[in-house]
Amino acid sequence: MPQDELIEQYRYPAALERAYVRTNFVSSLDGGVQLDGKSGGLGNADDQRLLGLLRTLADVVLVGRVTSAAEAYGGVSAAEERLAIRAKLGLAPVPPIAVVTASCAIDPQSSLFSGDVKPIILTCEAAPVQRRALLTAAGADLAICGGERVDLPTALDALEQRGLYRVICEGGPHLAGGLATADLIDEICLTLSPMLAGGDALRMLEGPVPQLTRTLSLQGVLRSDDTGHLFLRYTR
Image 1 (cartoon, rainbow, N blue to C red):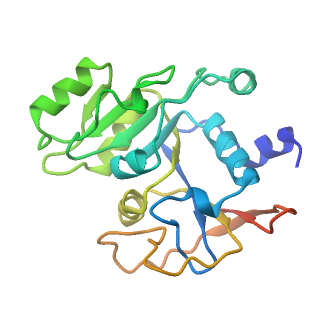
Image 2 (cartoon, rainbow, N blue to C red; image 1 turned 30 degrees about the vertical axis):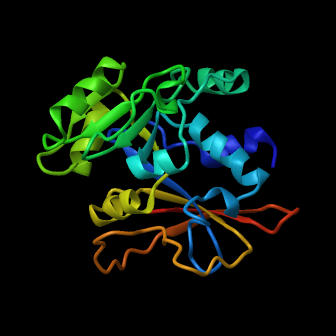
C-alpha cells in the first residue's frame, strides 16, 4: 500500500481531549509474542516498516523497562522522511520514549539516552531516590506516577500534561496487561506471523489480568504478500 494511504489508515483521531493508547504487537499463530525473549524473530520487513510508521504518527512511544532492555531500545532519531510526515501532521520533530518502571533500574549510559530527545521516565515514589537522581542528571524527564507502583492512569495524565496525546505502546506484555486491566487501550495493531512459537512464549497480555470480555471492532486488514504476515487493526 502506498505511504499516503497507510498514513490515512493509521492516523490518530482528530482533536483528542485525552491520551489515545494504541498498542502494537506481533504474534505467532499460537499466540506467542516472543521468540527467545524477543519479538523480532516473529516479524518481517513489512512489520518493521509499519512499526516505523506507527512511531512517526505518535506523540510518544510507551514501553516497559524490561522490554526496553531486552529489545535494546534507543532514542528515536529524526529521519528526514519522518520529519516531513510529522511536520505535515503538525507533530513535534521526534517522539520521545516513555519508559514505565517502578524501580528506575535503568543505566543512564544506555542507548535510551542516545536519541535526539531524552526519555521520559514514568515511575513511582517507591523507586530509590539515588536511581531517580542519576536518571534526572542524565537528562531524563522523570514523573512520579503513584506510590508503591506506577499507576497507569496517572502515567497517561503525565503524558497529557506534556502535550503527548497520541500514544503508541510497544509492550511488553505486562505493561499491556496493566493497560487492559485499567481499560486504557483504545486500539490494537496486531501483526499475525505465519509461524508457531510453542515453548513458554508470553501472550500479548500478561500479569494479574482478570477475565476480560471486551469486544473490539476490526478496522483494517493488510497482508504481506512475500511471507503471509497479516496486519490487523482493532479499535474500541
